[in-house]
Length: 327
Image (cartoon, rainbow, N blue to C red):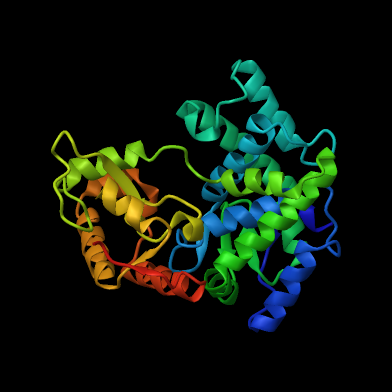
C-alpha cells in the first residue's frame, strides 16, 4: 500500500515528455483509483510551489501543506462541497477547527487568524503524510517525486519540474476540470461549469494589501510601468502580478509590483514587454538586500534571477503571447 510509505525514493533517473504525459493521463482519469479529491489537491499544491523549490528541486511539507489546506478550507468550509471518503480526516479536522472557533462559513482561508491557519496546516500536514504523499507517489510509480516524512522534504524529479513549468497552464486546466468533475459526482451538482468556477478560484488570495504595504515601505511610491506617482491622494494604488496570476497560480512578492489603476486595468492578463523583465529582476535584487524581508518572507529564500526569466519565457510558451506596453 503506497499511501502508507514513510519514505519514497525516485525510481526513474530519466523521463521523456511522452512518459510524463502518459503517467499524468493515468493519474487524472478513471484509471487511477481515487476515493477522494486529494490527489488533485496535491497536484494543485505542487503547481503553486513550482518556483519555490531550492536548487535541488526540493520543497518543504509545510509549503505544500499550506497550499493544500487553503484549497480544502475554501472547498469544504467556504463552498460546503463534499470531497469524498466519508469520515475524511482532512474534512473532519477542518470542520472541527471551524466549529470550535465558531468561524462563519463565508470566511475564506486567507482571512483566518494566522494562529488558526497554522493550526489547520499542522493538522492537515499530518493527514497528508498518511493519505496523500504516498498515494500519488504510487500512481506515478515513484517517478515524479521523492518524499521523506522524517525530514519533511518533497523533491521533484528534475524532468517533471521542467515539464510542469513548461505546460503549467494546460496542467492547471486539466487538473481543475477533472477535480471539478469528481466533485460534481460527489455532490450531485449537475453543472461542472459552476464547480469549475469554484475550483479555479480556491487558490487565489482575496487581498494583496499586505504585499502593497511592504512594497510601499521599501520602494518609491510610483507606478512600476509608467512611473506615475502613487503618493498623490487622487491616484489609487494597485498591486499587479508581473506574470499574470492565471499562469502563476500563486502570490510571490518577487512577482508583484505597484501600479496605478490605469496600467493595472490596461495590462489585465497580459505579459509586459521584455524590457520590464530586466526592471523586475533589478527590483528583486534590491529586495534581497533587506535581510528582514528575506527572513520573514519564505518566497524570497529560494528566489533566483533565472526563476523570474524562466517564468517569463514559460508563460509565453503557455500561450501568453499578447505582449503589453503602457500607453
